[in-house]
Image (cartoon, rainbow, N blue to C red; front, side):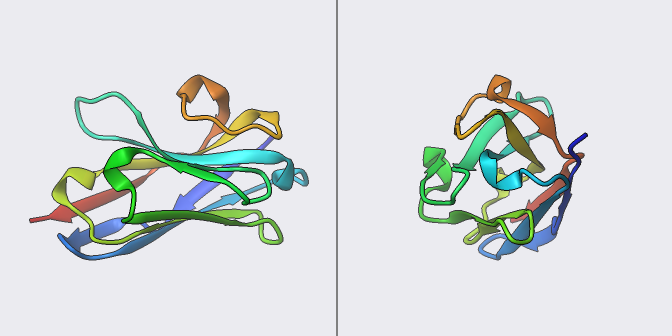
Length: 125
């Protein structure tokens, strides 16, 4: 069974930064793509960023390009999301997720089968 545990959320003023971490259990972390999604109150869960199993490629939703950076450390079974220049519209619960198939990367929720419990990010104006 794979467990994903997020940390690093909190309250920050607009323009500030946060770094989210997601620690994964299991010995095959480096075989799977990882992603961050977010869900604001009353809205559907949306894709934020994804990274390939090796870390060699990544993808971002347009609204965070240039502000957020996804990375991973396969020696620590951890994926990160560095968030800079935060805006009030970034306020949401952020979830990390693992692809359901090895050596894939995706932007749709159905492509991921393991999810963390979420961490709250609140950006005040």
